[in-house]
Image (cartoon, rainbow, N blue to C red; front, side, top):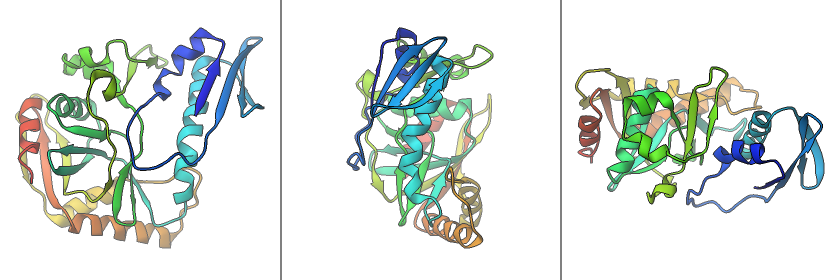
Length: 270
């Protein structure tokens, strides 16, 4: 996707769309968007044809954000492929799928893993299709609450694109390659499922998770692919795929307290 605009505020707001992950998929298509100021808002053209009029730069961002990700997921709508709300990281030779709490501490842990040499593929969605897992390529989102909880994160997000919500809270868009870190998305099996449960202010603890409980956690992470009509047989197929994934992995529960301790524990999973 190529975006051109003559408005500085739009260019700044669209910063979170930029990402430079390496991944095994060639582009499915090339699209050019042009954003031009028109009256009190902005005209958005797609390949030279007017797509819509957006009143504010943030509306342009939300529109293009959908145009980036929805077409990529559309081929999987109504199929047995399962969209999982999960993070994916590789520590050494071990590829981990992290499900469960997706809060401030979870994002802080991913940043801790990154700075410790792990490859964090993503913190948003993964796609389970044909029994292999692929992360949906999107830059990591780091809220100001994460920076408050993990002060070392301030160095990572300094100068990164950001947006502000209606309450003025800042959310940065962090591309690991801008700090010389590896960002490579794989397509294949995962070695371990880690169910993350927050333990604020406490110690971190890693323990085995019974497979039937881990399967429930992974099934709970299945989300609807935008625009699809989910039928019972599709739900059953996705649950079956999630159970096969769990059966092929070791299963763990991480009580997430101290971040350094948690990162060290995850590094011991083989």
